[in-house]
Image (cartoon, rainbow, N blue to C red; front, side):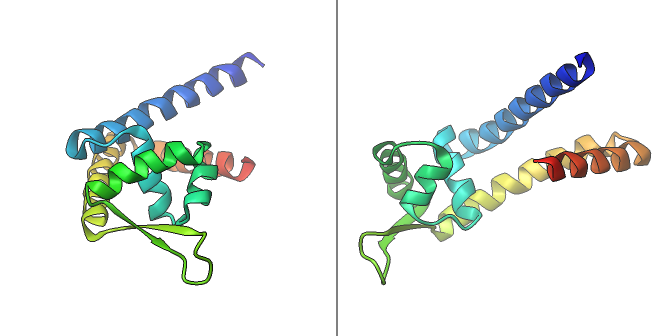
Length: 138
C-alpha cells in the first residue's frame, strides 16, 4: 500500500503544479482569478449556462455571478437569456475571450511540449500508456 500512497501524493503534487502553471499563464497575461480561469475553461468545453457552470465549479450562483460580471466587464464573455427559457442565462466567450484563451493554451502546450522533449521516446510511450490507464479508471 505504501507505493500507492507515494504515487497518489506525486499525482496530487503534479496536479497542483500544473494548475499553478496554467493559473500563472492566464493570471499574468490577463489578470484573471483562478475561479475566472476555471469558468473560461468550462465555457471553452461547452458548459454555457450559469447553473451548469456553478454546479461544475462547486460554487454558489452569487459567487459565480461576481466572477462572470468581472469577465463580462473585461470583455472576455457575454451573457444572454436562452431563447426558449428566459430564466436560463447562457455565457459565451467573446472574440477577445477566445483569443486570450487560445494564447494562454498555446503557451501552456508549448511549455508542456518542451518538457516532454527532454524525455526518451520509451518514457513518453510509458507515460502515455499510464495516463490512459489512469483516465480509464476514473
